Amino acid sequence: MSVHILEIRGEAIVALGAESQIEAEQIVEEDFFRSDLMSLETEGKPLWNGIDELFLRDPYPEEFAAFQSAVQKAGAEIDDYVLFLVPVTDPSDDLLEEK
Image 1 (cartoon, rainbow, N blue to C red):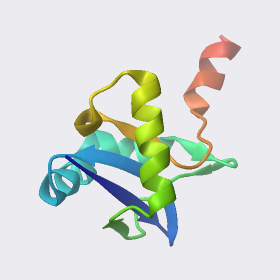
Image 2 (image 1 turned 90 degrees about the horizontal axis):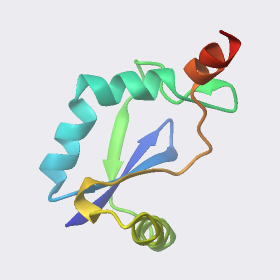
Image 3 (image 1 turned 90 degrees about the vertical axis):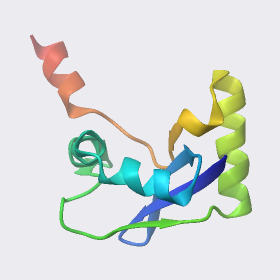
């Protein structure tokens, strides 16, 4: 098990639990994951514009600790867990509430 940090525009956005760097790269390449990054927002802006580089790196100690804490609280398996490191909103939730 390992934890990987996805950076966009130099900001840590997501912590991913994966068996390996290769598995983390595969997750980031998935269409559903990229679609989520483009539809979810932080501070009213999409997490990713679909163009900027997606950069995976090892976590800093505080990022690793935050990830471990979130996994324990959720009672989840660490290699199947995704933790957003920035506040995230889903604008489609607003559309559902308007109906």
